[in-house]
Amino acid sequence: QDDAEIMFLLASTLTRAAPSLVEEVPELPRLQNEVVKLGFASAHLCDHSIGKMLADPLIFLARDPRLEVYALHVAFGPPSDDDHVRKFLHELLGERSYALSVDVREARKEVISFNLDVLVFPDLGMEIPSYLLAFSRLARVQCAWW
Image (cartoon, rainbow, N blue to C red; front, side, top):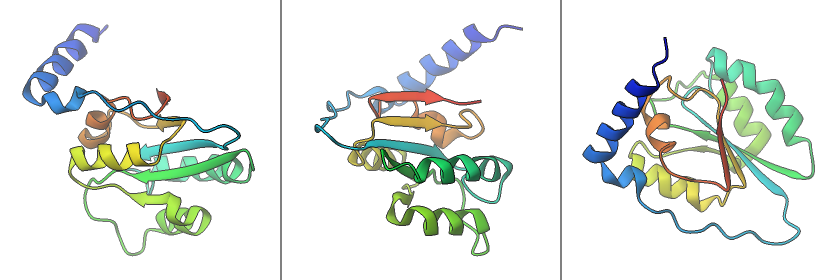
């Protein structure tokens, strides 16, 4: 069944309740001859099927010298100390494996500060924080995968 009307009503309700979700985001400057900054934002970049599925593509993309890859860990509960995927992403990407604030407004600012060219939400709709982040234009190109 087509749920477009229900999704529209949900989005309308959320933006009326929290207008900051759709606040204007400053224009993102693009410098010449830069590498393409590619970010993945998810609460499941961890020992979860999403994190395990994305590990190989992130390795492949991180090896491309034309790209600067970011793993943006959307806050959705405390990280586990024995989370192998999260540790691996930190080893692979260093400071570009970044834990976003639990506060959605702060997380928006953090994402904007990376000045991303492309932002991918690989599992949009699986949890509320990334769904709320996706209301704002946080990169030049922004897309959902799945």
